[in-house]
Image 1 (spheres, one colour):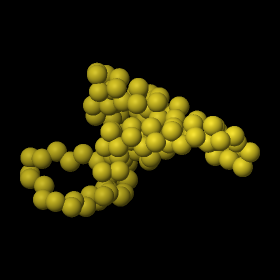
Image 2 (cartoon, helix red, strand yellow):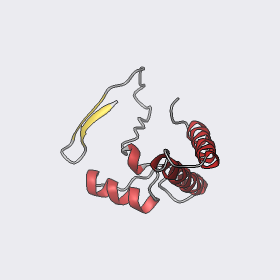
Image 3 (cartoon, helix red, strand yellow):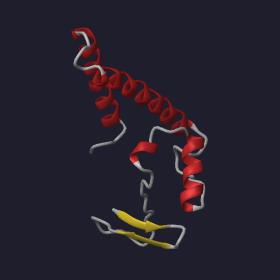
Length: 118
């Protein structure tokens, strides 16, 4: 885990395993609500919050970034489908609820495939 502010120059990282002197430390510093934002939006947030542009695989041009953007788009679509059902849960027909449950299952599978919740 980590806490602190990169802008202030104070960041505390707590490791759960030994780290060798030449080992890179990777930390996801984005809040969960930004994980489905576009690369441009995530880059703007890191510049504003930390004063740098992220250069990780999913923020830099390349196949990993394209795949991440596709997955983000699909997560947004599924989340919207689920929200429509939840908002109208009391009046939604059974088929709409079933569709929402299928969307939730697909979203969970996509998140697990992307390493979330492991």
